[in-house]
Length: 245
Image (cartoon, rainbow, N blue to C red; front, side):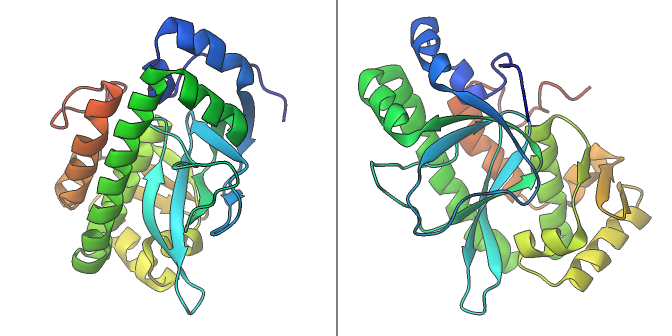
């Protein structure tokens, strides 16, 4: 899919000094990630890193029964594929959960830039620490919070990253990301829909009442934002995303 090189919509890239960014950008290739696109498999060599612009990528781990469980999500605040070393791999699968644009760079080029730019190295180090914090919080979230709370948190985080309140996604795929059965997702979505917070029809979800959804979401949403927002220079975790009216 042909795409023009976009403005800097990835907040991590936007944090680079102009000189570093000017050297970095020619090595990035734009691409579109359809929902369900697998960026890399668990244990597979990570050939490229991706900087999402308006989509969302899930990092998932697979259980013995083959079922995936989401441990973290990455959007326009970060990058997918780190920590990366030449020929290295990660113990998770990366899969696009909300379709959108991304900027991709080969792992060797990224590692060269990481060694060259102290500003990039500092940003990436801080982001990886925040990502690990998100993974740690997800363990407690998956164990302790209801499906309605987790679905609300998922929707809010996806809206923050994508900059829109409507997503193309199936109940089956949502169930895989949340680690529950499709029927459980249907019950949770139905509860949110009856409360007037979302509209859910075949293959699509639309957020109708963001404030109401924030009241239902577990505290993990605020924790996740408090981890990542300081890294990317967004306003404090108590404020709404810049694009929300």
